[in-house]
Image (cartoon, rainbow, N blue to C red; front, side, top):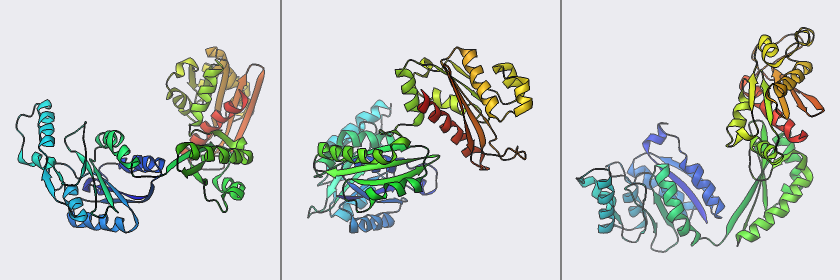
Length: 412
């Protein structure tokens, strides 16, 4: 089944709100084996709304709309859906009563005439109750049964609840296949190189399919299969995942679409290890990433942001002679920072970073994008040099944090 998503609302076109509904629905439909072909956004204009629905039906069997089901004059999704599908609106007394009860719960004693509009539904529609608001949704097929439109309210909470409680089941009854996919997260390899080494698997692929994606500082491989049952699709994905990992396994840090910080934190918890950090150029971004994860107090007693040389000496015990001889951005300083963080907190592991985020701050020998990550654990100590030659402060800092997590992943 091929589908188009249609988001209705002038506020979307004006940039007043972010359209999160399309992201959610694309993921949910693909998961159920429905191919999403198009995303459309249209304002509260009945002519354009009808035009887009008809346009979508040229290539698609299903159109799913969000928005335009409210009580005001510019909420016209229901009326236009009826017009396109050759149906008419009729009053549903039971829906009217449920709206009245909900409004009474809001301490609204009088129902205005436009609220009655929300109880009018297409005569042939399958009705979807709204447990979070007053606007019901519905699904409507054309007379021939070859096209269908499903309309849901625009507020994300109402839409998601309606989808999960009603629309998902309606869709599953209409589809004869299931899509299963797994996303492999990679670090340390670029997207172009990743695709190149996987070309023997990608060329001529039918099912399962492989696709590579780039994200800030990392890449992912999406392995997907559409089969008659979830079990068949999952088995096909598992087999292809093994083949992918045979080629790029050393770069894969998660087969379940987890963030690198989550993978490392879980590893630390499983091994009952604690970690402390010392950061200069990243300004606490690493500590923030660790503490974003629930339960991080089990593994992270504390961290330090030591931006100046004075702070490095005072808070971490970095030697003055080290700073004078090698500079703040050096392997020697990074290692003393990591050891200082471990010693001060009593943690099992110390991790540090010192570098030049840019722009500016460079010397003849040192430039933006240069950083050192120090690591100490038991008798083991090492330092990794990052040399990106990139004058982008945000990306340099973000990349340094990723390298810190990767260093932990590879050495604990």
